[in-house]
Image 1 (cartoon, rainbow, N blue to C red):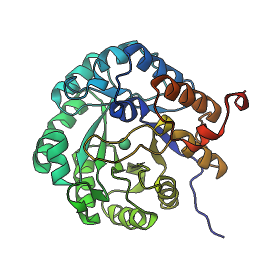
Image 2 (image 1 turned 60 degrees about the horizontal axis):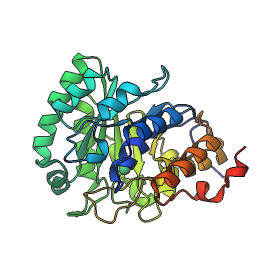
Image 3 (image 1 turned 30 degrees about the horizontal axis):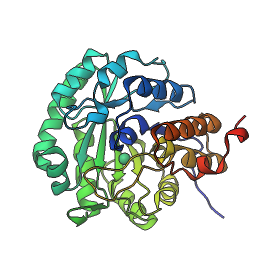
Image 4 (image 1 turned 90 degrees about the horizontal axis):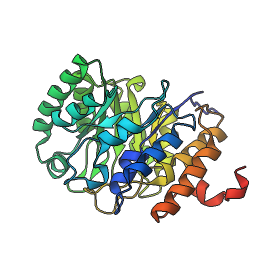
Length: 304
Ligand code: MG
């Protein structure tokens, strides 16, 4: 049996941003700092800290600058944050940020609902953010949402996703994270899409970001790994969703992803038991459902 998988994979933990911003409650600054500090002890090499957005728009991400200032930053970990505009980037510069993320969409309607501008206008906005970031030697990661379907437009053609990924890459994003925001993609969709995107952007500059709404996330991760992807976004406890994609559920859970990778003999450097402990403590504290099968299956006393 041929089973081509990478030997090593990087997990990008998006829980402190993508997970927490979709909760109905706001975690305190202290609890956000504590969560990131705990995640920093698990062996993760990239942890998304938050989002420099208006607190009126996303109250869960208010005071991200304070969180950023107070976390114990480790030299071997990247701590990106989302900066949707130049103002957000300035806030990031003030706390000596080293990596930022911008958020684009393959769907024009989704872009208008999420960012209050057309897809073309969002691209213009990105260019000024990227240029400013590069002047300060800051790396820029690009999110591309709605790569399979859009909650408003339905199916998005692989050509459109490919074009947007190509534009983000050419503008200077070092990596494009392809997001199945609605979670409707199947391994067939993902394999077809990746092969199309590879005509413009190589697998070395891509990551995948799958939501588990239709239970396809891990299957999609597996097909992406087989297609050469080595960077996977996930969220502790399967937290997440999207306020602009009604009914969408969380990101693939970091624990479930790690369990599968370990079972396939793929190195990540991340400690599964530590992740499970953080996940169980966090979801109990905020009173939300832990959607990680692995964390639900492991009891506390099995982790020692
Ligand atoms: Mg997400």
